[in-house]
Image 1 (cartoon, rainbow, N blue to C red):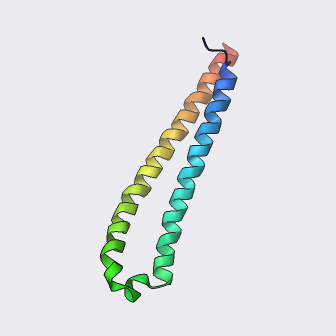
Image 2 (cartoon, rainbow, N blue to C red):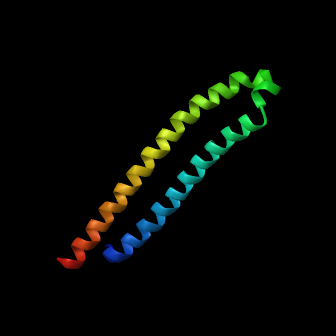
Image 3 (cartoon, rainbow, N blue to C red):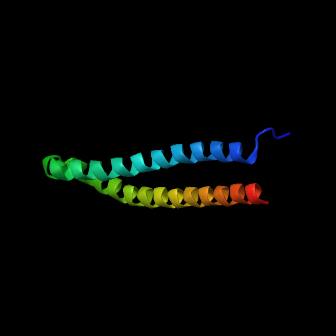
Length: 92
């Protein structure tokens, strides 16, 4: 038995999607700025033993960034679906 109206379900979904989207943006910013810090402080030149780890990290970050972008697109499509559903229930 669902006691929430369509607008209330939409509001809860918006809150959850917004939290997930903020997490994804923070994650992408951390990836971007950590790479800038590695280049700024010349970590690869100062610590040559870490070069292999840094290269592995860069490969992983590429996949991680793409997956975050795809998840973000899916979240935006879900919000679009919620909007259409709310409009449909209001006007019909």
